[in-house]
Amino acid sequence: MRMRTRRHGMVGLAVAASLALGTAVLGTGPAPVGAGPAGAPDAARAVPGDDVRLNEIQVVGSHNSYKVLPSQEEQDLIRSVIGAGADLMQYEHAPLPTQFGSQKVRQIELDVWVDSAGGRFREPLLRNALGLGPYQPEIMDQPGIKAFHIQDVDYGSTCPSFVLCLQQVKRWSDANRGHVPIAVLVELKDSPLVVGDFDFTEPEPWTAAAMDALDAEIRSVFPEDQMITPDDIRGGRPTLREAVLTDGWPTLGDSRGQVMFLMDNGGGYRTDYLAGHPSLAGRVLFTNANPGDADAAFIKRNDPFDASIPGLVADGFVVRTRSDGDTVEARNNDTGPRDAALASGAQWVSTDYPVPGLAVGFTSPFYVEIPGGTVARCNPVNAPPSCRSGDLEDLGTTPVRPPGSTAPSTTVPGGPTTTSGSTTVPGSSSTTTTVPGSSTTRPGSPTGPTMRPGGSATAPPASGARPRPAQPRYTG
Image (cartoon, one colour):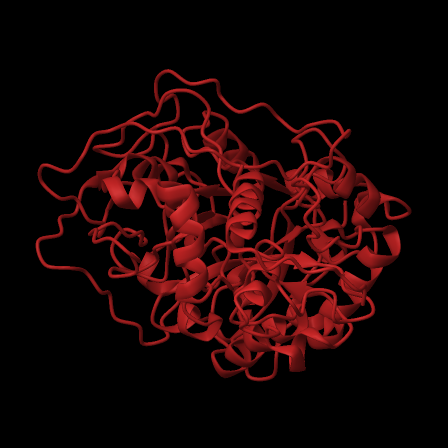
């Protein structure tokens, strides 16, 4: 662990921390996936909904799923300098098992940092300057990948190590073996914070060896028969893309009780992860690819108004989009992006508000749930006519809605009509917003697809959906 020189001047520290915060915010068919963990339902048991494929459903996911706010002292210090800029990061999540249970989340996101020797992130700058001591040193001192948002300024995590997060996922999965597949979106982080001469923690880069270690940590927790991997989907096809477009994804009967891993990053991170692994042979993560790439299976489209999403879903790809970011939609109760995300058919709709009552520092009825209140629903773009949302998963969860919520109709051309259990509040704000954010493409690397430049909503929106001008971008 490298040594640092600390500066304890409150004014200088506040300026540095606030600037850092602003920088960071800114032919054979697929191989059988397996029967999953012992006792999991399989096709032979003819569980209702088992014939529906995993890409033919839609679920809610959470964004930065590990995140908890730093101490109140640190929040106050940041807000004293940057004011309302602190609002962008004023959200947090329950522990992962709670999200899977009472909040019905089936996709999570983990930001991961290399820490090969251990201890690199034990003393966040802001925390140390306030005399609060190391952060969970019993975990942070251990070698291995860590899970948090931003070094030194937004480090709070319900599972500070990657393996600890994975163990929480596995324990819940083992205890609830009939669940639809859980997707884990992984964002590789190694961006330094450069502000004057302040000594922020320098991250280790995501080298090829570090990416191998990432796969190894996942495999240390999950056996092969409890994961859906690129090798499973590719089968005997020459490329993953060909397998997805020709043979498709496994049924729920073949994939209940299992997890799959997705890479959020593009550019050089994706290129490095693919090196020596054509079409992701031997890898664990599905990469965030372009539709024409050999490794194309998972495609990230964070803009819920992106007109390409329904077509990608119809073609057979799996897509993640977002319904809100940086607390903006929640503060304005702006349900337009949420409704557009649900109507798009993206299999994973990510939010910071999967149930009512999660707003921190403000009040809002905003939240995101699957229309009808089920854990999963038949995908509005590509589900078969025989699909019934109530058959997809039933672990005894009960829909939770605030008083006065209404159920707008969600209709997508070519898809079934469903009724939403989401919230619409009379007189809610129609303010449009552009959300600042940061790139997950390695500097100097080719960028992925360009977001829609804005204007009108070109994806088929749900009732009440409203477009936002300019280019929506979100924090990582």
